[in-house]
Length: 276
Image (cartoon, rainbow, N blue to C red; front, side, top):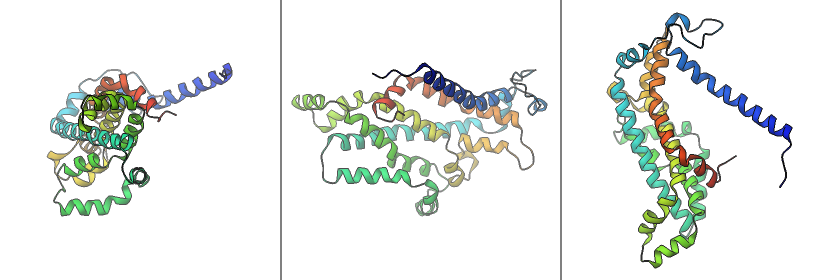
């Protein structure tokens, strides 16, 4: 096995450290700003440690807008989309990976091809369809299409399920299991890493979705967290302390989901062939 030179290893780690710092700075600035008084936000050189530390920004941000209602709306949509996506994508992935049927390869390629189409291209016709269905100003446009059309999830789970030994499936069928029982008793338990990775991606993407709610939602009681947070930005002034405090509060569920699923996350990405 070819051994990498020490200089190359040091260079790679240096690039990774610099990249990690660059990606961490915006998060640290958000956290620092959420604890400052307004006069300290844009001082130069910037003060990373607030003095004084203002914890009151968090309850002020929470009470300034109907955050509790937006939290419930975002949780409802994100949980529904995540659970539904795992179910539909695992079924489709199992079919493409383990079941032979006419045209499976062509259908799979067509599904992958949909990943090349930007969402912005289909915004107008999709909006007209939802308007005909009377779904505008409801949560349905944000919940149903992602569950039924996640090409990335189908690809991820198809790649992972293809690596599950056929002998496990054969043994289950010899014991009398049908396709559905094989799916629930063999495929799903062995696909936990890929399911965990897809759950993290789906929950984060749905929780942080801003464009969809901006287009389809008009009533404030239906707003999600990203849409509600944008209300802190005024036409002439913006209260950055409250905006950053609200942004920090909004990250709590995403961090919680990642911590719960991180045990399987790396394994799911690696075994499904998505690693770099």
